[in-house]
Structure formats: C-alpha cells, structure tokens
Length: 256
Image (cartoon, rainbow, N blue to C red; front, side, top):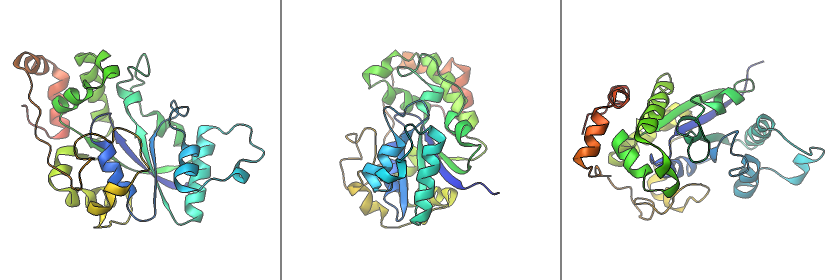
C-alpha cells in the first residue's frame, strides 16, 4: 500500500525558522508541529501540540495506550489531520542532528526524524538556510550555544548542507527580501495551498516554539535582515576553514 505523505521543514537553530514557520502555519488547513524530534519529545511533544494547539487529539484517542511511541504518535496525528482535511507539516529540530550541543554531547550527523518515520511515511521536504557567518553570530547570542566551537559548528553546518541538496532549500535572506515569492516556493515544495494573506496573518499565529522576541517577529511586517558585522580575526578563521567554503558553494552564498 502507498504510504501517507507528510511535510518536513528542516532548519538549524537561529536560521529564521520561527518566522518562516509562523508564515507556513498561518496558511489555511495547515497543522504545524514545531521543533519535533524523536530525541526531544519530553521538551516538544507532538501529541501535546496536536491537542493543545489544534484540538486534534482527545483522551479517547489514547485509551488503552499506556505508552505511545514516536512513530505511532505521528501516525495518529496524520490520521486525524486527514480526517479533518488538514495538511500536516513537521518542523524538525535539526539542531540535534548536526550541532547537538548543549542538548546532546555529540550530534548524530544524520536526519533522525526522517530515518525514524521513513518506514511509515513518504515526505514532501524543504529546508531553510542562512549565511554561515550570520548563522554563527546569531547562534552565539544564546548562552547555551556558546559552548559550540567554530570548527564543530562549520562541520555540522556542512553535513546539514549536504543532506538537504536532494530536496532543496530557501535562503532566509531571500525570504526577508521577497517573502511572497519565497513562500510560494515553499508552498509548492510542501504541496500546501498558498494564501497571499499570510503577510498579515503570520503576526497573529501563535502555535510555535522558538524565539518569538527577535527582530521581525515583533513587527507587523517582515523586514530585510542586514548582514551582521564581524571582526577581521574571526572572519579570517572562517576563511581558513575548508568546510566554510564548501558550505558557501552548496548553498549559493558569497564570501563576506
């Protein structure tokens, strides 16, 4: 039998995923689960989100189930979405797979969510990326993420960049410059109906995890993000790292 298809959105921490997923989530008939990962269900639980945010899961759906494993949980949510003519989109917590720290001692360097769900589902997929320098500078604003070394960060970002090549990506900078154009691309890739009113609706969409206080999320419009200033010595460290140059090539960025 043909497997049901679900939609997967991949992004690393501090790459603009919260803003873009607010825009995706506000589309009509979309059920978006946020920062979901098989290793993070105690923090971001898909059943809890489906119940608390969308009223999709009820107590009777879990009768006789003392425990429910991750795949069963997503199967139940997908079935409920299908019954209600909704499109399920899962925002993967890709940070665990390719950076890890401070939540894991070592990253997995593979897309665990896809590996876990591939026996039960097929996927529509797209990723979000950001220039590696701006990604790094933004990541290091968070206290827990300061533990990540530049070499480990670039190694993880390179693995992520390689993994997303088969299904494609949107650059966050492009999204902030032309949100409607890039959102059409995202909707086409994920097979969801595009709603041109998302530029108004996203500010009111609250079914999301992540940093909702950063610039762009407290305004009624999506603003262009300028490049962040970088010290010359740090820039030299980037340029001395081969992973940095391969990331630029794979994602279509220029050196700063």
